[in-house]
Image (cartoon, rainbow, N blue to C red; front, side, top):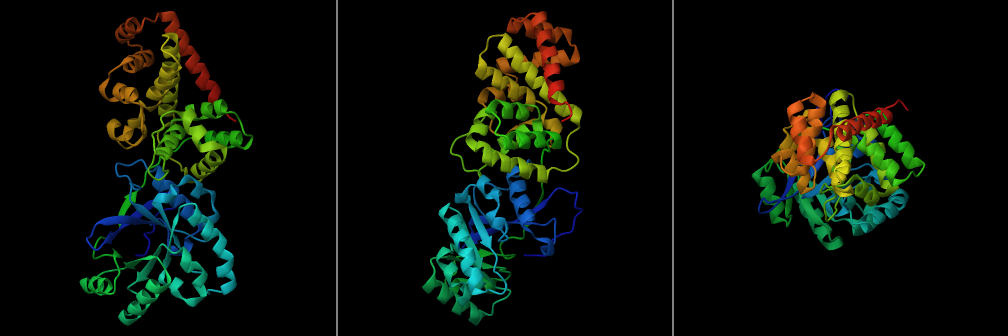
Length: 415
């Protein structure tokens, strides 16, 4: 890999993505690496933050996608709980050599590597794994990367033959920079390639929607004490950043669910307290200063709660009330992110009725949103029209508005 670009520590992580292709030059996967820091400070913590940021990125480009992701690891990060948040079928963990390759340490590391592979993760090693000291690891190798910048051509031929005889791994020629590199590797039977000849790493300045740290701490405390699903859901509903990040993560390809999740309660139940705790801790680590002004987030939360209460007043049922809250909460997403509303909403999976209300202004949720906006702006004409359409009177609406304001004030009291 090329040297890392130096950026201020407070800047959002800068992720580079380089494709890995087959002999037809079809992309089969991407290697991710952190360009925000130098290789000398590559740590378990930076590995964790890299993966989490890639999964939570809210830009127009989906870093994760559906291809295989090759992620550099330290041996320390392999035991980290962040791997619980990943879809093993999509991840290839690049396992570094031990440096001195002491046989006892190679053996000591074997159980955790075997466990990761049993969980469904694929493992990639550098060509150093073909050294006799690493023999116990060979059975676990799904990929072996051959660094053409470090290997002589006659050495490449020997290593390929050895790998073919002793492993089931697919071989990847990396740092392929010339046509001669490519033709030589192909002639020896290598079928996957990575390097400047095919593509330079593309860089993405990642964007996160940071929640308030106080709310993350509150969530962590609830999870530590094994609070009820209802209590956890309340914390998620009070912070647009928390809500967005959770829905973004659980519906990402990297999480690996086979169906969409579009309610906070369902997300909490699917994740479980243990995974949710790990997610909150990672989010706390990744959160930086900046982000949308607090007033915008406060308005979104009040709007969501007001719409939820109005839906209940109009006897629309609990499911529609839940959707009303989501509609109000994410109605200001374009003000929170550097995106227009449509591409911002495309980052998360929402019920069709919510999307129709926010993007087309259609349905009863759209009318609830109109009424909530009228309450905020004191637009009497819009207020009267929406109230008549929903068959709500001023007493019901004003009461709901006061309840929403009081509920939000209570939720945002200092811890």
